[in-house]
Image 1 (tube, rainbow, N blue to C red):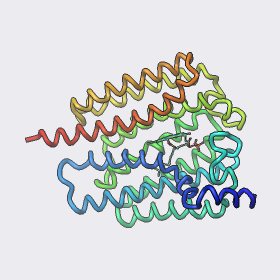
Image 2 (image 1 turned 90 degrees about the vertical axis):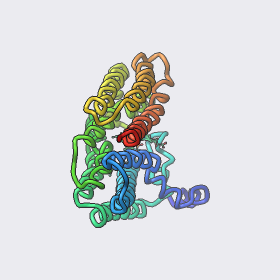
Image 3 (image 1 turned 180 degrees about the horizontal axis):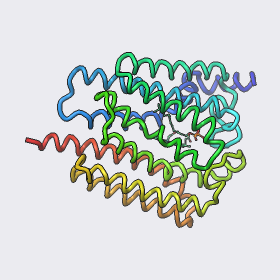
Length: 305
Ligand code: HEM
Ligand SMILES: CC(C)=CCC/C(C)=C/CC/C(C)=C/COP(=O)(O)OP(=O)(O)O
């Protein structure tokens, strides 16, 4: 173990391993979703007090989400070592010690929630804590190892950022951010099961009960297709309830067309690479939907008398 740590230190500086534990790319996309949740809650100009809540909210949410991701690395270190995709991670490869990673994870988590409680509002702090526990403990410790519905239930925690953004600046829960949560919640199965289909053998060998392992590839492909349609329906709701306008509608129709083309390829199962490409497209798709919400919001402000 010490040899692995010494060799790893040469090629992987400590700061990089600590950053890897944070799943920072995932956290960045979550922050975009949280920022859109914040900006959609503000009808016009941003006052200094709101700007302060936004900055503190984003930092707090980022720290808490990064902390949750680091706890996931600690809890999953042995499981990660058994799968090729995750075996080079800092803990799985033995480069980083578990106590140090745990200290990092807990520092991030507590500082994130404390920052929200002290500088934003108690509601956001509680909801963030709930999401953190939902992902780092309920999903990672229990659901991931127990049921193929793991990511559907765990998806609630991952979908929280727009709500956390909204509550950061308003202090209340509204129908609009719940709708944004619904979009991410419905998107999570096509996002993840596409990857799980591609990596099915690794999950099977590691004994993780992901849907393609427990119910077979054909069933998992069908679920990607069906949840894809649920996501399409969810993305149409902001227009239906008058929360977004035509720019949003046209943008999501284009995005949905591409999204469902990929999901169709996954469902048909003729192309081995399609699930991996569908997985990567799902991330661009989610960013596209949230960007469309934002542009539409500012267009409607600019056009309002
Ligand atoms: C329970 C819910 C989710 C599950 C099970 C899940 C699963 C995964 C997995 C297994 C990866 C591959 C990670 C890797 O290879 O290191 C991944 C990547 C990614 N996910 Fe998700 N995800 C979920 C929710 C989300 C959410 C809510 C977002 C954003 C709002 C998101 C954004 C991303 C991004 C940006 C990547 C690419 C990371 C990279 O480039 O390293 N995911 N996801
Ligand atoms: C406070 C807050 C908003 C919390 C959200 C936390 C968070 C970072 C969720 C990320 C979702 C994700 C990447 C799940 C994959 O875990 P996995 O263990 O199935 O994937 P892996 O095998 O790649 O580790």
